[in-house]
Length: 110
Length: 114
Image 1 (cartoon, one colour):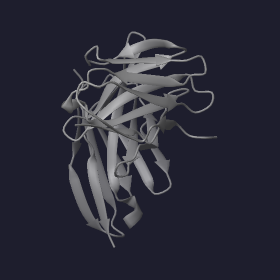
Image 2 (cartoon, each protein chain N blue to C red):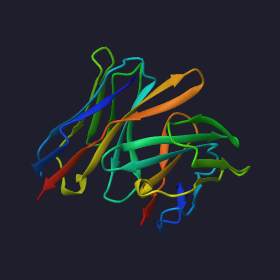
Image 3 (cartoon, each protein chain N blue to C red):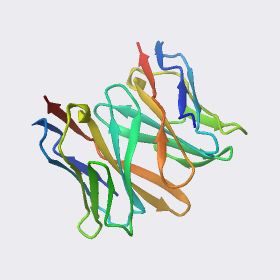
Image 4 (cartoon, helix red, strand yellow):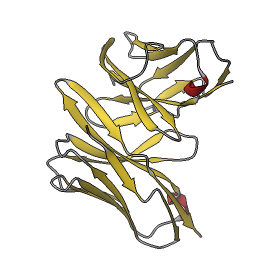
């Protein structure tokens, strides 16, 4: 079974731009969660989608949004990028209790 | 509010040593606890998942224990190898109604020296 894939793997943007990241879960997994990882804050939960519905949300501003498609693929969007948005963005899919992570997208905001 | 702490933040050991990584949490009302491994610049690999009703889980050279009442979990690595060098993270799962949330520690960075 293929693992969780994320595209792109690396991204460089400038302040004020917007970005869309993509995540394809493991086949059969309907839950996709997104996390932001920074050296100082560690892993911070962004949101979780299940069957195209956002079922849980972390404490991030409205500039961070996401969606899930009928094939369970998920995208997250960050608008009006700020320097502090530079991070590794990880998505994880799950069928039951265990989460399986993708390799992440490294976003650098200049 | 749940807080997860991992001590030490960094550890350097010679190859072959047995070692213990610690994870503590402030609220014992957890659903499960997971240990992950992260290699530099990469995603996370799930190592062991312990349900709240379990005391320990084993996989190869890894053994994780859970003591909910004291808010502690340990990850034991036997006969460490240079390939074990990575950051090890623990996360606890809690539910608020139907909402599942993982709360993460900051990790222990492990270096195993040949």
